[in-house]
Amino acid sequence: MKPILWQELGFSDEEARELAEVRRSDDHFPLQKELELWAQWVKETDHGFTLTFDELDAAWSARDNVDLSVEGLLRPEQQKRVFVLLDELDRRFRDATIESELGGPKDPKRWWRGRIPVSNAARLYLFEHGVAGLDD
Image (cartoon, rainbow, N blue to C red; front, side):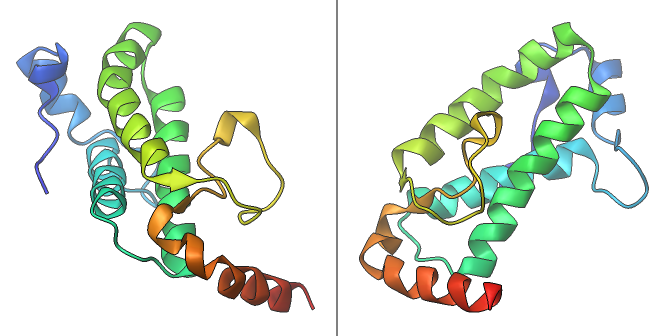
């Protein structure tokens, strides 16, 4: 996985050093790692990997974490620069996925929740059955 190069997003060397380690708490990965995890999920989805429900949930959670960290840790002008990268990753994820009923109630702000890879579409019934079983 290619590391996030903050300078390519218009950050100074000093800002890049800070952003490489900034995190919401000791319980969370640094923002850089969160972005890299989301990029990895997008790459796997792009390549057509079939994912389990737990993997999909981990991917959605990775994107949730990025969102919370960007909003909670960065100033608006920094957010705009990060969105250059994030918008491209999100576009690729959208292009490689379809909407489903998975992931719980829909929240327009968290549009990625419930999206599944096109490669999973033929097996959607397996996920729906598994999720229904969790609710019993």
